[in-house]
Image (cartoon, rainbow, N blue to C red; front, side):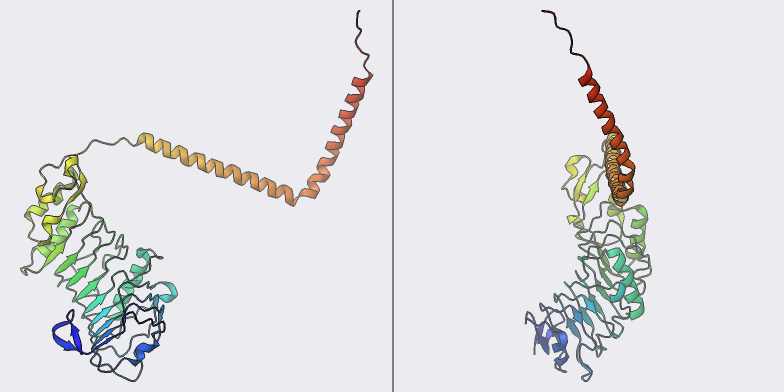
Amino acid sequence: MGNYRQWKPDKQVYITNCTNSGFTNPDVIEYTPKETEVLIFNGNHFETLPWNLLGIWSEHEKLEVIDLTNNGIKEIQGKSFHKVNNVRRLILNHNDLYIVSTMSHPRLFSNFENLEELHLTNTFTEQIDSKWYLTDLKDVFISSELKKLKKLHLEQNEIWEIKDDDMFCELPELLDLHLGDNQLSDINFSLSCLKKLRYLDLEYNKIRNLRKDTLDKLDVVFGNKSNSVSQIDLHGNPFTCDCNMNPLYDWLKVTKARLVNKKEMRCYDGFPAYNAGLRIVNVEELNCGPVKVLADHTATSHHAVTSTLLGILIVLTATLIAVVLWINRITVREKMEPLFKNFKTSLQYSTIEKQDEEPPEVNV
């Protein structure tokens, strides 16, 4: 028994903790005591989770939390998780997970019938672009039917864009969506389908500005909610504070949406130049900077590309000619030998004629 304040701060729980134990075979998890309420298995190393990770005999009815952080997991097989009906929090942070191609298992979480929190911070491999595995992740959401999920963490996954408008729409009970520390530059996905959404975390992304239609989207979801806990976090983004920011600047003054750390939203750059580093709430001017002339740079760039392509073409042509000559070297030699002989004979006659010429007369 012990304290696990992250889950039940006022109550002792039965914890099985195998942190940094040097395990390389996940089969040992099968021997988790049936009394376990919180299973912590962090900092070990095994790339694949086998079928029936928790065994086939014990029901593990008391198990509510599974934490498999930082184990180098690359694949979770489709039948890995059984006996997890009562698990409410699953943590897979800081792994190297593949969910594409042959490693895609859409029903990955289907046995988590009562799952409320799914932690996938820095979970997915960096070897595959997020635009590919996000499609498979959406399939997982659909096939696993996570109808009770309330919190989803996707921080630190190098997500540049979420192209599927309905990416999260299969999570009807979702309250908190954490997308901080990614590479997002806009909110491309639907929020209106998440009727219960109360918190959207977009801190420390690559948002430089937000379009008016995006601001309207935020107002629809967050601006009309009477619940005071409904909030958005946009701080830590590299905002450009120039004339293009006027819609966002005005919106920040009038929106009813509650912004976490609003006073910490800062300008990364802008015009006037002294806007850089200022808190947005302290900005007084938003002007348009001088128009940059890009024609010369474009022409130079095109010239460089053309020169490079021409050089590659010359090399390829020369290589092709050399290959053709080598393949047909016998035929070429037969054709060229008569020419060389004629040339050699002509050269000999020319030399003889010069030798036969009389020496010039010398007057003494």
